Length: 179
Image (cartoon, rainbow, N blue to C red; front, side, top):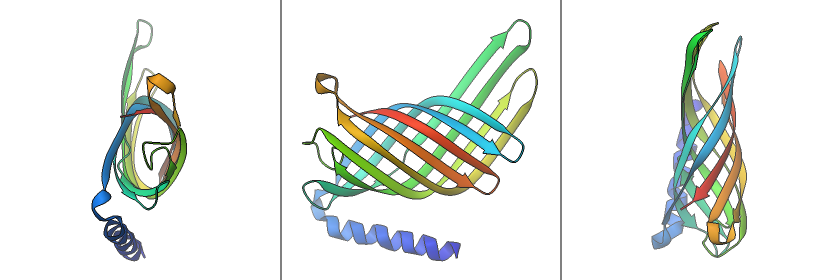
């Protein structure tokens, strides 16, 4: 079943490449994320930086599909004179196909939205004065969000995402500036 899904995904992306023609565009955005990692016996959270490069394939003046790589990296440390130190490291690397409407599908609109799905992997490790743990997962990834113009300050994107694996799931929020 998994191979059939992968083959179907690759066929879909090749079809999109063929339809897009020479108008393929590169867009990217960077910002911050907050993620909650949940497993059988553990729940923890992390924050850090996010970067999303994507290839845009226009379908019309207001719509496009894209191949996105919404990466996230968290690296946090805390030191306390009573409990000692602690820290957390995490990353998420999904690859997804998205539908874009309005801002983000082109550069002319002041508002837009998007949604996408694909496959991803995520990892975290933490240690503090009370406990330590780590987790790794691969699974289905989905996100949805809005994009809006901020006037002279630029264009922005806000999204919610989920990476659902067998033993670990990751739920998050991402806020980015579009470049």
